[in-house]
Image (tube, rainbow, N blue to C red; front, side):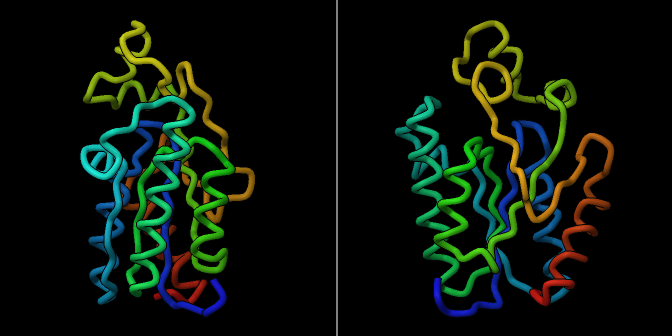
Length: 179
C-alpha cells in the first residue's frame, strides 16, 4: 500500500483456544464506545464458507490465509477497521498479509497461551481428537506453529483476562493514533 490510511487491521494469531475469537468480540465492543466501526473476520466462520473446500494440510493452511488476506485487503481498502482471528501458524503467510495491508496499519497480536491451557479451554474437543489421532495436522499437536518474532503486541492469555488484554490493545491503538 502506498497511501496512508487511518484504519487498521488487528491480526490475532495463536493456538486454537488461545482466545482469538473471544478477544475479537470484546475488542469490537470496546471500539464501538470510541465510535469506531469495525468488522470481524474469524477463522471458524470463514472455514464454513469461503474456505470450506480446504483441509488442514500445510498447503491448505497457506491457501486459507492467502484467501483471507485478499478479503482483508478489500475490506481495508473500503476503509473498514478489521479484527482478524486466525491461527495463521506460518510466519511467511502472516508477513504476506502484512505486506498487502501495509506495515503501518497491520497490528499483529500474538496470543501467548500454552497448549495445556488451550486444551483445558477446548469446548469443541479438538485437542482430544487430535491426541487420539482422529484429527491430523492439528496446530500445536502434530503441526507446527511459528511464534511471531516481532509482533506488535504479545498478550499472555493464560494469565490475563479478556478485559485486561483489550485495555492493552486499546492503549496501543491510542498510542498509534488509530483511535
